[in-house]
Image (cartoon, rainbow over all chains, first blue to last red; front, side):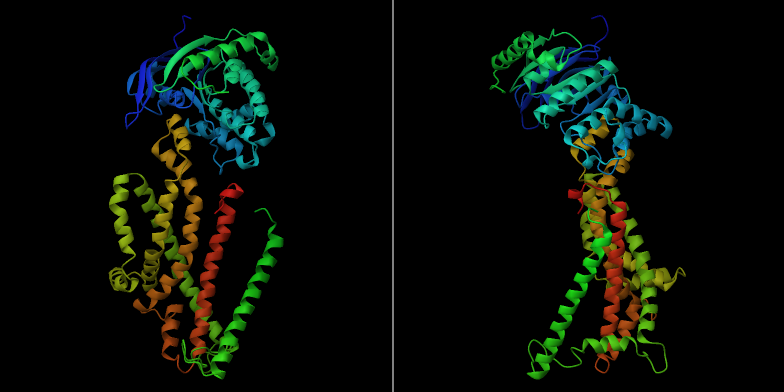
Length: 259
Length: 282
């Protein structure tokens, strides 16, 4: 990989007030078009790590670079879109207006916003819902809106914090497949936090297994499943091998078995 | 907004009328028991302390003064006058109260420093500050009724500030993170996130503030020597209470109706303006 890293972490640690060490000595590089999952037991600091990349939480030590800039510069340049476990849609805005929120912040004019919102609605398969309010949508649909919002301004990096954690298994699998399609179409780089082994293996090009207290990188596993992936991948022997590998890395890293 | 308005309104009206009927019955029953058995506890019941309700209604349609217009006519004019004062007072209080909340929401230091004074402002009786406002504004050649509006605003800003502040601070922390991820300015966060979040809180405050504006205007009218409003009418009929108690009662009824009217306008505005998930509507 000669292209410069999209995310570059060196010796990152985070100690919260009160002395809890959430992260310790994290080194990680994420390259363009990679899909990297952070997986680990609760309390391993994976969500904190994601927020450090997004400059929403400052690291205690270490350096963070995003697109070759400081994390703060990258945030100010709107270099990433973020998706949380909850969709965090604004109730008082329609679906279309929710997707347009970051575009308003970027100062796009109305016509351009409307066009982009339409494209994004098509991307997440919600064309006919532009005028709906968030509470009229199912949890899965809300999360798709939130993904559309994060991608609307075409950020080179997408940060996702357990985006499908609150959804049922069926919806989650459907959205996993949809996310892979979107990832392939948009060509963005993804850092994805999850505590589902199957999800991490299915989605990722690389899985970063973390250990808890303090959060550290226990092992990095390359996922060599072929692209593009469909749900059929979930039944292949190689998929199970990788799931087992991640599981053992988690146990080795001191995690209680996740599932 | 789940049930159609067309079906809900008649039910509401029916409920209102039924409750009114029951209250009317209780009043008249108490009046009958009180006079029949000469009750002196908790108070002596007679036609002065508890005039018959039909007498109060009748009084509305009789001339307030010999050969003058009906009491209802007089009171409606007075209501209009007081409503004007109260509406302006409400608007001043709402805008001012929200503006104070916006300023205070920008810094913990400001909030901690200023809130005690905001609370203290309400411990001073309106009557005590009325002369300052009336004389102060009067010296600038400003109409008396505007001074009354300012005094009404003094009452109404308080619930607005307190609720708006809480509303502005109640934004989902994740929604704030989202705004930060867009490198949103403070101004954007305020107008695109905090202000909309505070809207339901604001309307809860408006529901309290609307009748308060009427009360504030009524209380302040005598201080500004205004005769033409409901406050003037109340002072006037106070003096004749032992002879014609029904006139004061009638004025009270009209004052109450005006307060209820203001309240309903706020409720209606809220229905039209606040679009929220059904479970989030206060």
